[in-house]
Length: 311
Image (cartoon, rainbow, N blue to C red; front, top):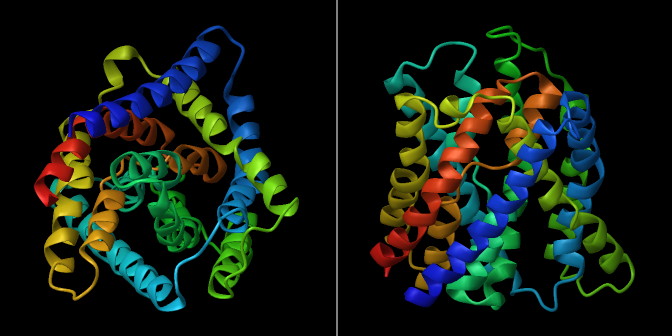
């Protein structure tokens, strides 16, 4: 367990280093809100779709179709559980209009792509990353549909935004749909195209972390940790939600290792996509940045504890 903890800790330190660079860049006037918005748009429309496709096209092998469908089904059920919990927690906490969408986003969507994959590799081994990729397919669709809807509800502090079909026909959604088809058709290890997609997609993680750090620089240091509601929601995100998933999935007759993988992925800190989407759709970027910061810090401790609990 000591080796696993050190591996996870090392991953978190690297992430915090990149976030701190974004923070310093904003303070040094190298980055500003215009750059934040432009960089967010660039990542969401180019690098992130490439990362989604690259995760399938560069895979050495894919699980059997039955195992793929089971993993996909567990992922969808996981998000259903987390979404229900998100609505329940925001109601119990009395989160007011103009902030509910961001809280629901934070409680539903974890940082699977940027933190989940390295953590899976450290705990279960590199061979389990393909299951993380399958888990991430419904995530990528839901975050740019339901997630966007959550955030858009907060635009203008309570003003409701009308969203049509064009809102959801994003490059990331299109890439997600293609990735699902390629996975079911067992298409992988595609040379040149896969490598090109992976190379472009590799910009997603550092770029997103720079944006998070830059967003945090807009807040006074005393405001980075947020208030009681944020902390309660963070603990629900990191501990309560994955434990509920674990308790329910233990009743399902599937490979226990697959259940453990699902639980760990549900225990990730707030998705970095949230901050970028707030800039694009006028959401509450301050609360989102606070939630990302707090949950990422807490996850250094909560993830190893959760792994010990589930065995």
